[in-house]
Every structure is written in structure tokens, then in C-alpha cells.
Image (cartoon, rainbow, N blue to C red; front, side):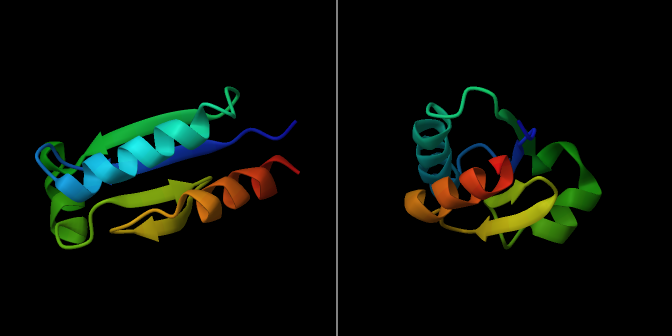
Length: 84
């Protein structure tokens, strides 16, 4: 089975990040083999400068999947595609 890594770049106090995190968590509950890594852009000056107006950013296996909002069905389809 293919390995899937999901990364989310965001920051504390970001309501869109909170919304995205909830959707990611719900979908990822169905894919326990998937690794989830969250990055706080406040901890990395370069990441902050690059993404400060785009968070949250969700990356699936190194490819940007979503910016600002995450659609649960599209995210699920992206995970399933990676697992093929």
C-alpha cells in the first residue's frame, strides 16, 4: 500500500485553519495509515512570508491540494488516489 503524508500549514487563532483541521481529522479517521503533520507558519519566517495570506494550505504527498478551504469529498478522493 502506498504511503500518504498530509501536511497542513497554518497558525493558531486562524478560524479557516480550525475548519480545515476538523475536516482533515474526520476524513483521516478513515485512513489510519496516513501520516498527518501540521506546521505553524509562525515558527518559520520564510514559511510565514510565503504563506501568510494563503493559510491554511494542505499538501498531499508534496503537492498542494487546497488553500483556504478544504472540501471533504475532494480531500477523500485525493487520499484514495494516492493509495492506489
